[in-house]
Length: 285
Ligand SMILES: N[C@@H](CCC[C@H](N)C(=O)O)C(=O)O
Image (cartoon, rainbow, N blue to C red; front, side, top):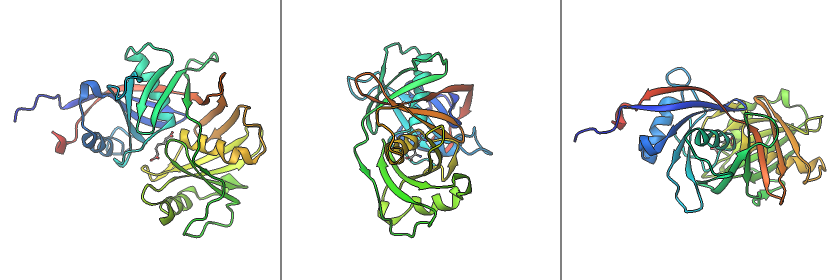
């Protein structure tokens, strides 16, 4: 068969609070879901590829309400239903690609989302409107033992699966060790969960460190993790659910609040780092 697609794929490297992504326009690249997974697994490793926590692809919309569709694939090639930092980056990528509606609406595997430029005078800020988080368990029991330092353990589906573990001393948590163990607890099968360790209080409201499934490591920040923490741990502080909650991650600050009309949002930066071209993995050619 004659190969008609280019071997090289154009991409933009982007980051949102240090959570970084290879971002491509799949209307031109035309990669199938399996090919997107293979590309993520080939391009995300930091020593052998471009280096990223995941791959984002902008595609033609699936529903008439959307301007475009977002595909999200973790660094290990597994597909995830949603990515909060990634969705903000893809919004900025879509603007650069010429999408002009405001807000922009996009299909994801977790449903329809919308985003707009953040209202404050912050050129990199993006406000991602999200559906209310309805699947919440305030206290969960896992099959495996949970470290004693975890004072409360909650679960929230914030577009994807999250455990929220409340601790007193966030800096003392061995995130890699505990996250890896809790993330695959049999009671969470088959999807598993990202694991967020949260310290309550302080001037920023919450501090958060996340072990991400699909990266199988701590990442500098996780947007849906911030939403899950705001919904569960944030409420444990007695904070008014209507006030904006500031969440500090190792990669930077994010805000969770309610817009006029009551829609929940996640707000933070989305930044282009560089543009490049990368070869498709050999098996996929
Ligand atoms: N970093 C993302 C979440 C990406 C998906 C996650 N690893 C999963 O598999 O659920 C975010 O910013 O939300």
